[in-house]
Image 1 (cartoon, rainbow, N blue to C red):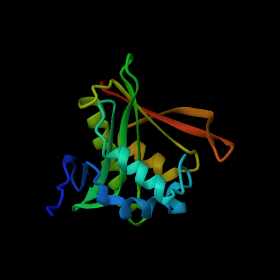
Image 2 (cartoon, helix red, strand yellow):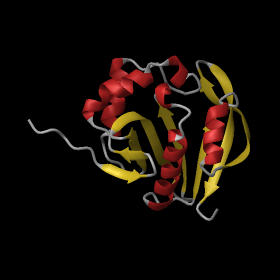
Image 3 (cartoon, rainbow, N blue to C red):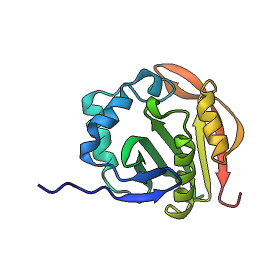
Image 4 (cartoon, rainbow, N blue to C red):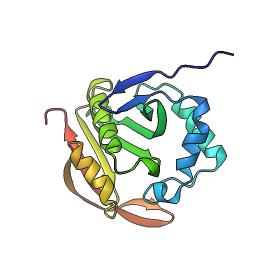
Length: 176
């Protein structure tokens, strides 16, 4: 049986973003069950069924969202997505998650920069936002290094585990 080749969508210095494959289950499930990875996220820990459902959705092409594998030297190290939130006003949002073994190497920043490029070009968006928990200083640094501007505190923005959580809002305009 022939191996399915991964489609690479875009590449930066060391990071590539490509389509997910059904065979990515083990790599995705590894980081999706890591408490350090999902501690600030709206999801997690994933069950095996949730990871399979996520992969099924990620492998299905969409005109409103790009959910992509983050790759370094062909190895899947996480996920990154950019999606339309308001079609009329051409606004969108981006997010990313990386296996903690790859934190602190600049990969998340490169992935975020690639998401900005894709959001403005492939999805034809004019404004992209991202949020992070106020305690997530690493993600805040990633967003700032990627070129997003801090816009403010969203009080009680997320409901996670039956608790309201604040978020920091970052944005970038196509014209920035």
